[in-house]
Image (tube, rainbow, N blue to C red; front, side):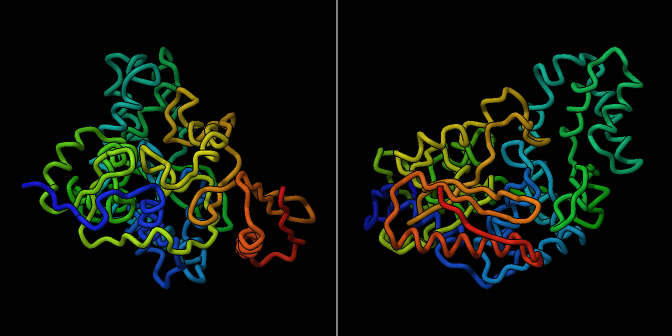
Length: 390
């Protein structure tokens, strides 16, 4: 049976896709909703930078209190773990247990083969992986601790290569890592030990794709693949066709969507929004034109391609040499520049660098949003604060 086609909007241009995505990402208006519900709705938050989920939720929830997310982490109702694309995500406990088995092929491919591990360990690979499991059964450990202990047992192997056995296991980063106002090394525990009461039921891939469309659609098959990193998705989309509607983008590519999902008028106002260093809203489509005008895309190539520029797995954190140190913001719904926080001993400055021409009204709205973000990031501090436009 073919998918239904919405004849009133068969062609969706970049602006129409932008507004549809912003509506589903809760970015057209801040919402009165719990952090836990937003995390589930977005199918997790990109989280390799510990502070990122807080900014992600602040941009979407009215009067977001960072302690709400901290409590979710401390109570193990939410966890930080490797999932889509082999990167760290913050998800609910249910999604951690349900999504991790689906993502295992990514970890087998990225960490279990080639020069990072499998190609160096030979017949000892399974034994090294089993040793990693046993070490975490004893207690949560950092990757460095695991590397040292493995090196004592297998001195003939590269310790770094052996440590990459760790992410092939279902593991989570435990607090205080990721808790607001706290710091701590990335210590890992087995999912089965950290979430012992969570039923070990894997999500069905069809259901996960439907959730993706609800949070990121309309989308092509390539978009879904970009978001999760899995293969075989054409077959999944063909199987789901009877439940979906289809459109075309202005390049003629087929877009799939949920029949009742919001697709606002392309001229719907979109307020300025500041994003975390990594936000899935601009990482989860193969074609990112729905989030960035052409003149901006070229200038942000180093940000978008930074992960791929290093021929290394990224699930355990970004190397310090990565060329990504600015976050992004959107004006009128599209990425329009970068920002960063400059912390000094006596003052904090939020530096805003527009990369497209802004009107006076847009600049004023962006300044107000920047001040709100600065207040959020420095709440409880008496330090001098300011916003600076470059």
